[in-house]
Image (tube, rainbow over all chains, first blue to last red; front, side, top):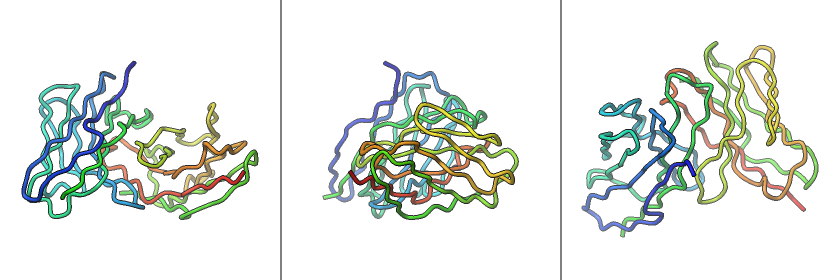
Length: 115
Length: 110
């Protein structure tokens, strides 16, 4: 089945460590996005990518990094510079950012906890 | 970025219609109005979208005001499975900047 897969579902990290969250899609979508969600709040955009080898900062990019070496994959690294990384992270994709009349598909999220 | 405003919470009885409002007074002519819903600890799920005309699909209906400054998501017969957080967002060709806001938490009572 086509879809977007995030792994792992739960992730624990020690303070000061970098950690990478995986996001893979087999929908042949050009655009991919990373969001952060804190309890009781909406989604905030971290990074987005329109096409392979291109990505742009969102509203809260500090302390995060991404890569887009393949169309299907858009991993997010939470670095030690991110002061409060404990959150629910969501990855999404859409056919193209240039087609706002199409829906975005979301993964099931990764819950990151710093211990 | 154009933003949306939604009530924090709403309640409905099972099998009754639900009207979820959204204000977007700064909407631009190229913004599409999208609705998503999110169950606890899951990713958001697409519900419906529209530009100017009212829209219907198997999940819901979307009523868009003539001036496009507001819209209403209509669930015709709420079920317990419709209990979720509903987000109204605007998407244009700069869709990477879509702002989700805090959404409306819908509670459905049996």
